[in-house]
Image (cartoon, rainbow, N blue to C red):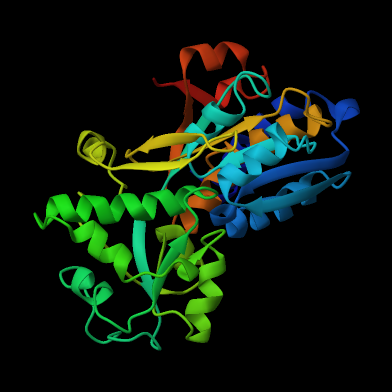
Amino acid sequence: MSKHFTRFIAVLFLAVPLMLAAGNASAEPSGKLIIFHAGSLSVPFAQIEKNFEAMYPKVDVLREAGGSTKMARMISEVGKPADIMASADYVVIDKNLIPKFASWNIRFASNQMVLCYTDKSKFADKINSDNWADILLTKGVVWGHSDPNLDPCGYRSLMVLQLAEKFYEKPGLYEHFLANRPEKNVRPKSVELISLLQSGHMDYAWEYLSVAVQHGLKYVTLDKHLNLGDYSMTPYYKAARVQVTGKKPGTFIERVGKSITYGITKIDKAPNPEAADAFLAYLFSPEGGLKILKDMGQPPFVPVRTSAEGMEKLPEAIKPLVTVSE
């Protein structure tokens, strides 16, 4: 098989879903496309935006990043218009947007928790997968995580610490961790912690592996019992439970540990549904958005997944790119 033919097949494979989304030349999407997404998706979505706008020059992608829970509530409670919402935890979409604001939820990527640091961090030359807990308990070591009420990375950080107590069989370990982490070290979203690490104002921060890779941070990998990155370990992860604030003041929701799964949906009242469908088609393409995610350290699901009920409600343009998986 010639190189030219191979290249042709690759281009055709990428183009088919995009043509399905666009329908035909006269239906080429245009206008503003508003996307709310998790902060941990900022780097890959920036590249996806660049590629998408090159293919559809009449579309202007407007992205707003932040903690997934916060971004979902901007739609459901504040009433901000949006076409697409991408969450670091697919459950956030189920809890905050379905069925009133969205009709389906697609799982498109995974991740794992890591402990990030830099050369400036205390004990940077000693920390490893075996002694990280002891170092976080050391007085004078500054470490933090994002706000569990606003950002899934925040409640997942607490889940890791709870699971460490179980895994290492050290009763009270979780409370000891929190006693050495002042509230000022809890920030609204996980990406804010990166600048604190890089400036030397924080020694360690809990982040997703993809974020560590994308920002060139050093990191400690954790045992699969702790990192929330192994689907087969979900029964074990369920031992971790974190209470976060609910939709109404004074109410709470319990988040139960599970493997990290990102979700995305199109808002039912999307201002620009045609452009949204085209963007999702590119994102879900194995040689398009999913490849970008993979190249940037974030394992995608190929193909992306939804429930049987969700499949029935999907736009026809993207159904060929999605599989049913409960």
